[in-house]
Length: 197
Image 1 (cartoon, rainbow, N blue to C red):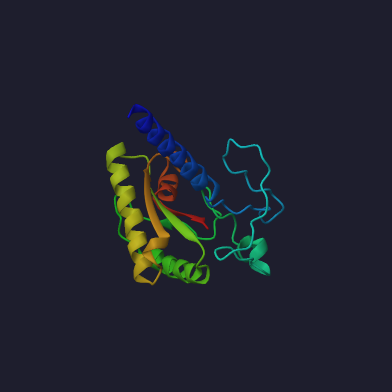
Image 2: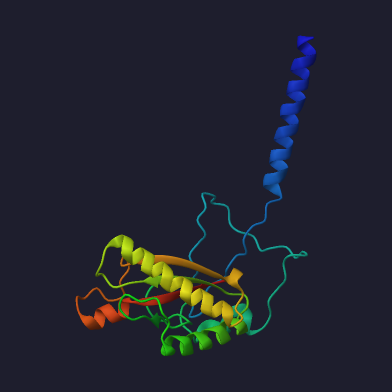
């Protein structure tokens, strides 16, 4: 009876190992990026493996992109896709002191952003809420979240799919201008857009 139990346990362990190896083998791999516009190389993906990446095989969920989109030329004139500060394809939106209300200028800018996003449906956006450095950390984190959500909700009302929009609040932790002046404070009260594919 013990031999029969040990045999079943060994068979079960072998089956579990085979299934685990099969699951690892069939996992999808991310696409390999050849480079970014401007000749800069894309940073390598974080991996402990030192084996070189091979091109993706054609299949039902992989298709080649032809023409201008393959090199990212449609985004080349709009700056980097992500990062901090100015220079991305979507300009920052400014806020008044202690407010998450959208100004008329902000609404005008967001209407243009929505138009751009409708033309670039393969992109996703993280809307970052930022504040100036006055007030407590907790207050500014909450205000930054309110700002990011106000922008997200307005973009969604203009037809941008909510699934493409994510919000995060940095409060006063990532100032665009660290100076202690009204001009710097005004720059730091913003929603920033980190665009990705």
